[in-house]
Image (cartoon, rainbow, N blue to C red):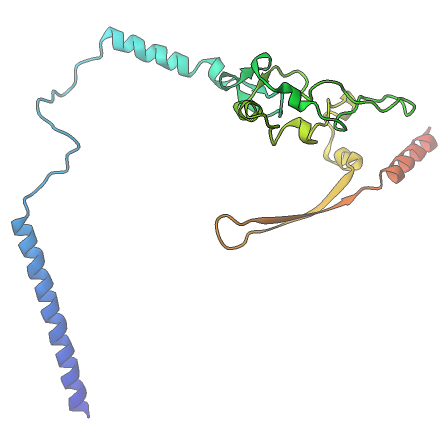
Length: 223
């Protein structure tokens, strides 16, 4: 039984060695038959090194192109009047030159600021635009040219109006107190594949009347 195993192992070794010898011979034949090629990108005939210095015209062109690429107009950003997104000014168009602005006149989206509880609830007239913005980003321009309201337009229920001075520069705790919705946890589950994603956000409404009553009562008590 042992001799049979030894005979089998010897046969396997001979087959492996013969196969390796054939591969080595094939590689040697390829090396001798194929000509040697040098890795060159292009022709290297009549190349002067070191190269001659650039001419004055080329230097001037390089400086002008650098100044044009680094000018403030290239990096300056402004808010889009339709969606409010910050976009380089060089890519935007003037609001007066954009067509189909009338599509942004949507009802039940805006509200005028109320300083008293007795003030009537009224809407803002005209197209729903970001205040203080006079240009439109290319994405919104393309949608309006196709006679469609942009997806991220403020007219799609995203309008929140101007932030009052009393609600600016708030701390994190103050933001939690005035928030209408308390964000508790966000669970994101990505399934197998590159185009499938599902997200689930769990939010709870804050009892704003109770918080308001407690805060007013405590202020009166301290006074």
